Image (cartoon, rainbow, N blue to C red; front, side, top):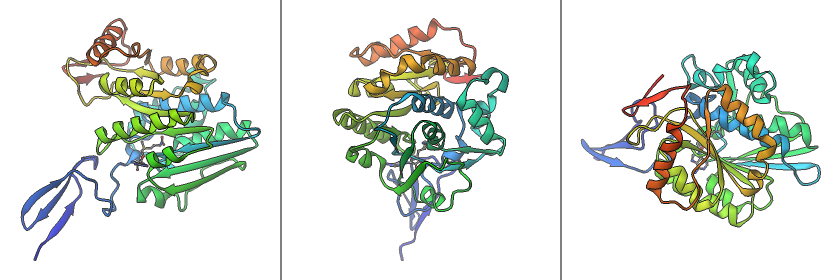
Length: 331
Ligand SMILES: C[S@@+](CC[C@H](N)C(=O)[O-])C[C@H]1O[C@@H](n2cnc3c(N)ncnc32)[C@H](O)[C@@H]1O
């Protein structure tokens, strides 16, 4: 008899591999098995971290200035995640939203909303932040949410008090967000926020393809990306010809490493044109977090030149947050 056992990966559950034992023989599968009920990626551990602070404050700033069709606005998220996250004592939120000091952030809508949620040890999904801002400016707000994970879907069955304004109507559907992005026709803003895990390479590739399609359909979109090393964001920026708003909190070491050095938002041309109206606000977020907003080097230069340029730009900076030594981040 053949005995097949799927073992959840050790550690944080983010590993790309599931081990399958067939009568003592170990076979490694690179594909995520859809029938396994555990999540391939769980955002809860990261909820409210530095990446979320940048992502959510940029989205809120955009929601405050974007125009919609007449009095309504349709927002679409292709990688929605769970609606709400319970925060654990040692979660990554401590180095992100948890560092907000009220006095220095008095005028920040993001800080006001995030600290309100942190008070109840919870942190909401990006669309909840966006909904609150859009609801103040539009009579009707339509929100379409997609996520491929069945456990995420289950959490949309009975979400607990999301504090969503009455003029917002939201719908969740379990679906592949990249495919949905390619099919969209009438969204005012589409946000893509892949997990880059368990298969980062695949997410970078699928994100690039989805963004190229959205560009050719003239759909307004933003996409979040992590910054570990200059080449990936550079390729995304080059293939889409889009602008990126990037922050860094740590220097690149001599070699690529798994320490997150920053993150960015790739923005379609319509959003890029709004930068003058939100620049002061998002720059203030970077400054309060002790981050630096770094311009991506000019387009069309080759990868190694892009790497050199990012390092040059970084070497000219004074780092308040942290430095990287031998690929390890030192606080
Ligand atoms: C970074 S989390 C989203 C976080 C959320 N946007 C926020 O800021 O609160 C990424 C989500 O993408 C989902 N996901 C992964 N691959 C997907 C795909 N191909 N289509 C749709 N969702 C996907 C994961 O289940 C996960 O919930």
